[in-house]
Length: 405
Ligand SMILES: Cc1cc2nc3c(=O)[nH]c(=O)nc-3n(C[C@H](O)[C@H](O)[C@H](O)COP(=O)(O)OP(=O)(O)OC[C@H]3O[C@@H](n4cnc5c(N)ncnc54)[C@H](O)[C@@H]3O)c2cc1C
Image 1 (spheres, rainbow, N blue to C red):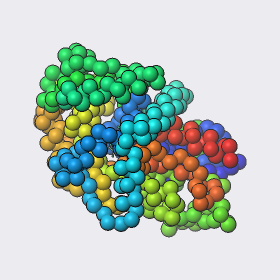
Image 2 (cartoon, rainbow, N blue to C red):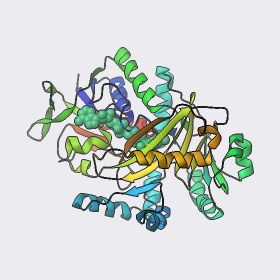
Image 3 (spheres, protein in one colour):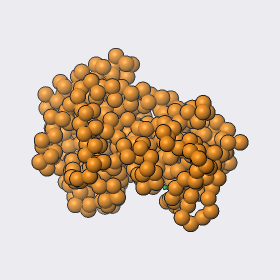
Image 4 (cartoon, rainbow, N blue to C red):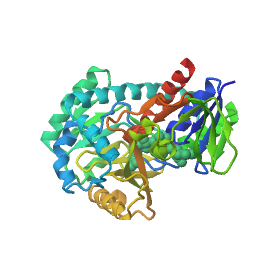
């Protein structure tokens, strides 16, 4: 039986390991942390955005760039780095901003999200795992008439592809989600996506890992950091660790998220991925919390009711790989969230703060491909803002690539 290791037990690695095991491979799932789902997947906004898919580099972001560069939008922060890789990544990001590039990146992401949705529902049906999954729907809240009417063309394009989205007035949105009557942010209109869902990504990682260990004899190596590859010629033969013997393998899926650069810096694919740091706050859910997921387009905040918890996530900080989080940014997020939904946050007794790095490519499209340098190495990384949404579709594609090799 072909031995395949998966490096990284975030949403992407866990999904890949599961589909590999189901396809009959001898799978070992490895993570530096002591349990699955602890990286970028842990405290994300929980959105399964089957019909969103919008690439980050966009004409709208281009128009907004002067405000970001001058530090006038608290949702973004750029830590300038004067190294060639950062500048190249930045130039490639800029090159993805024109409308044609944005739409082709968004369309490719939507196709992957749709594949993900189908695979995800199969996995739910066959495993029965529980992770606060809910088909909650989503409302994108637009602050003014200009941004709301600009959203219409993307809605029309997505609708033409078969995705369901509706433009609603504020009154119609409030009828759908009564908690919006207490929303203190500006709402000129909303785009409603009824098919979007949510779930706790970390819970998913833990539950699916236990399931595949029990039902599919997947081996796990947690608390172990892969330090490199052992090669015979240009082909992989084993994985190296700092603190245990090599693990002989026939193939490896590198699903190391933002840390791929630390593991495989000499692979060209790793250099295309940079961290974009985000933050989240989770509080016990009270009666004022909206049931439908919300995205505040002006403040770039995502809100979600996940089981008995309520979470806000946001901020996009482009920074040096390996830079830690900044506690001041929690305050920025806290102020923004408390301003718009005071009744949900103000009396919260217990606030869990979390920060993670989105593994971002300039196009927002993940890299799902065999390594160009090393035979037997497959990259499944760079899922940016949508890794939870795209994980299962990416897993399907990587398994197909390995099976066809
Ligand atoms: C604030 C925020 C909100 C977000 N909201 C959403 C959302 O609502 N919807 C959505 O779809 N996406 C969202 N995302 C994006 C999503 O969370 C990420 O794209 C996704 O988690 C990436 O998953 P991953 O498995 O690639 O990486 P990770 O979850 O980071 O997993 C990588 C794993 O690899 C391990 N690893 C790395 N290097 C090694 C090594 N050398 N040896 C062993 N193990 C190693 C790490 O320990 C880690 O556990 C959000 C992200 C952030 C930061």
